[in-house]
Every structure is written in C-alpha cells, then in structure tokens.
Image (cartoon, rainbow, N blue to C red; front, side, top):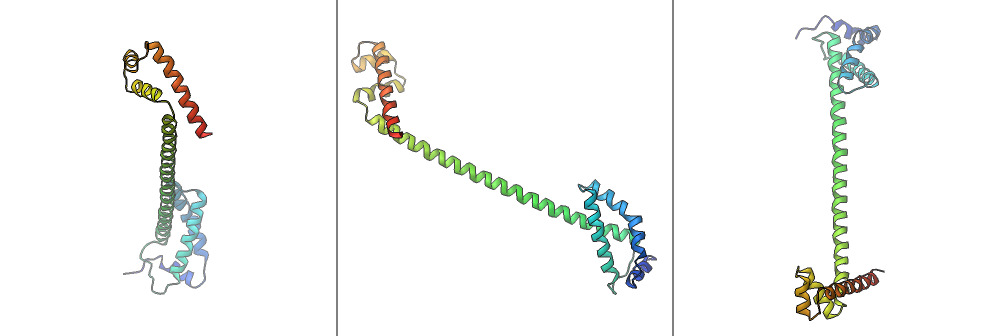
Length: 187
C-alpha cells in the first residue's frame, strides 16, 4: 500500500518534532469532543480519550513497520472512536454486572424472606393446633362445625344446645379460651 501524504507527519514525530501534536489538538480535538458527548460521554471523557488517542498515535509513529495510508486526523479520530466505544462497552458490562448482582441479591432476599415467613407460619400454625388441642371436646366440635359453614341452628341441634344464641355465646367463649391458650404459648 502506498503511504498517504500525511505520512511525513509520522516521520516528524519519529524524529522528535512534536509541532504536529499542537496542530492535531487544534484540528481534531473538537470532533472527538462532539463525538464523545453525542455518545453518552462528557467533555472530561472526551479529553481523556483524546489524550489516549494521541499516545496511541505516538506509539504508531515509532513503529517502523507502520505506514500511514489515510489522513493523520482520520486515523486519530478512528483511534479515539475505538477507545471510546471500548470504554462504553466496559461501562455497560459493569452496569450489567451490577444490575445482575442486585437482582440476584434481591431474589435471594425474597426467597430467604419467603422461607422465613413460611417457617414462621408453620410455627404459628403448630402453636394454634396445640392450643386447639387443649380446648374441651365441646369447644373443638363447636368451632369445627361453625368453621365448616354449618348454620348456627344446625350446630345447636347437633350439639344439644338450646338455640343459635347459645351457640354464639359458647363460640365466643371458646374462641377467647383458644386465643388465651395460644397467647400463653407465644409469650
């Protein structure tokens, strides 16, 4: 491939003439700034990328096997563009990793909290069952029949009570006794 006319600038850099760098700053820094700012970056990001691009160009200039085949400004812009895209990919990966970790942590917490709640509910249910077992046979039958949806009049007849009012009074007394037994276990 034939060398571009700007290859002379690389040769000047090889020989220690850095005046081309000032020219590149003036001519190309604005384009890099606009590109980076339009693509999720800041002026500070653009300045960092431009500096990295200048350093990369300087390294290319000192590679004896490298031949410039395009304008030096285009090469510098492409180097800066690639460096910025690489930083964006790295930032996106970091954001994705942070997001995945946050989701994993949240999922673990949800599972842990759910298991804790299930365990607490099982303990609570066991204590309710134990307290229920301490009730009189009549209270147990009364509460079970009412819980099954049987009408108060039918419950009164089946358990040999006078009427539905007696069932309600007895139900309230049994429920209160059950509550007290349960609370005594959890205290």
